Image 1: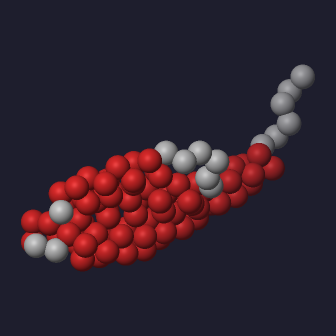
Image 2: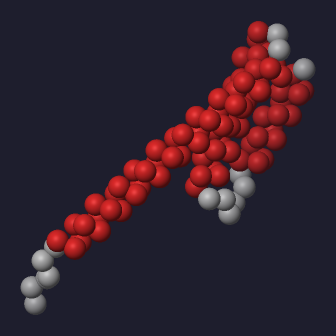
Amino acid sequence: MKSRILLGCLGAAVVSGCAGMTPTQQRVLSGTAGTTAAGAAIGAIAGNAGMGAAIGAGAGLVGSYLYDQHKQTEQRAFQQGYQQGRQKQPPAAP
């Protein structure tokens, strides 16, 4: 049982180091991996590590996706405000 938890955590650590991923993929993967490990640990204490890991993975997937959508909305608002500010700025004096 403990070896499965350790193997799951090790696998999550290896996968979370993947390069070349979009910010959305990175956020969702790291959020899911972290909550899977936490869910497995809590599930092991409660007597069912597999069920805890599954619940943690589901919660992490949904939560990290929603967090990513929030961050993207913030970034779009920032870029929109930045562009509006640059358009209203008077030209620099010579």
